[in-house]
Image (cartoon, rainbow, N blue to C red; front, top):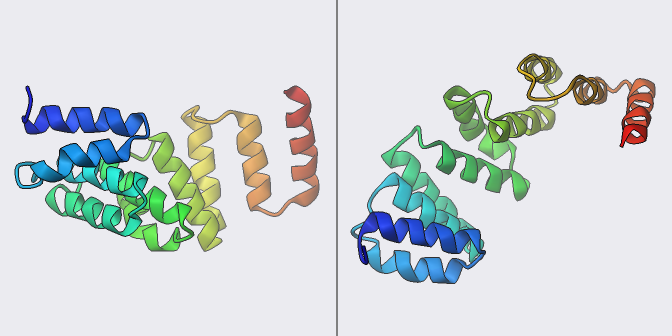
Length: 168
């Protein structure tokens, strides 16, 4: 249905999946007043970031989170963007809230591990990796390698990495 906010949102997401942010923004910006939802702000935020305006994208993602604090895709997009631009510690609140929302989500787990590494907080990191191993989100060889890297066990890490590479 042309002009319907939901249909516009879906079409904009399709453009974003094809890495066409200008086309997505051409649909979204005129509908700005009608798309005052967390999902609408989230999609427009992604489009702005893909189009190169990261600050505007972050602003829109924050607006989405103000509207709906448990909007996991917006929280992940904001935290991942901050992490990619070297601001993982600035994303701490968003990462921890994402962990509260869905602790076993693979992107949430990856962000949490990055945060713990940046904080050099090893005990929770090892606990996180052990939990991932128990949940079978990671195999035992990768978990052992990550734990030994985290604990600075250089010799063991070297041996495990060599074995892992030989397996592939």
